[in-house]
Each structure stands twice: as structure tokens, then as C-alpha cells.
Amino acid sequence: MSVGFLFVGRLGEYIAKLQQVTEEDVNESLLQIIRDHEEVITNMNTDQLWEGERPDGSMLPDYSPTSVQVFGKPEGPIRLFDQGDFYRGIFLDADQFPVMFEGRDEKTEMLKSDYGAILGINEENLRELNQSYLKDEILSYFARILSPL
Image (cartoon, rainbow, N blue to C red; front, top):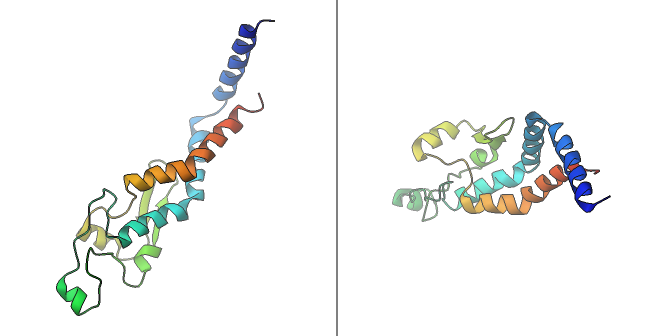
């Protein structure tokens, strides 16, 4: 038996195995991987907000002098943090693609209206998420689909 024949035979097995997997199966597995990392992902969002950064990399406006002098806010960009309810309320709606950041806190819609896009992660955090958390699990998922061949 030639090596070429073995390769073609093996390739046919891979193709047959992949044809058994539905788009729904793949989507649900990928969404579960994302849900498994929800805390990491939402912490990336709140860490950005703590620095006054929006998901697009732009900065929130600075606190006013009154906010700094009278209310004790730090100088620099607004952090959208008072008692932490808004930060704690951030979650992922990962039931289907696209995955969306949402907020449970009653102030969420008002803050989005006042400050624009504030829920989500920037490109740097997205790269870190993919490289440090998702990549290996996604590769393992597809490896499991193709094994044991």
C-alpha cells in the first residue's frame, strides 16, 4: 500500500467526520468556551473602564473640577465607578453570535446614552483573550472532533 493511498484514505475519514458536525454544534461549543471565560472577559471591560477607556480605545471625558474637589473623584478620565453596581452588573449575552456585552444595573442605559459605547473590550484585550484563553480551547475542540483517527 502506498503512502499516497493512506493519505487520501485518511483525508476521506477527516472529511466524513467533519460532515457529521453541524454548524449549530460548532456554534454552541464555541459559545460555551466563551461563557466559560465570562469573568475574564467582563473583567477586561471593567479594567478598561477603570482607566477611563472605551472599547474603541478612546478615552472618556475627564472628571470636572467640581467632581474632583467636592466629590473626591480622581483627576483624569471618568471611571463610571461609584459603588461598583454598574461594574458588577456587566455580563455577556453569549446565547448566540454575535456575543454582546450587557448590563444588569439600572444605570446602564443612561451611562451608554451619556458616554456612548462603554461595554466591550479593546483590540489589545481581544488579542490577549484570543491568545491566552480561547485559542487553545478552540484548537482542542476541533482536535476532539477529528479524533480518534
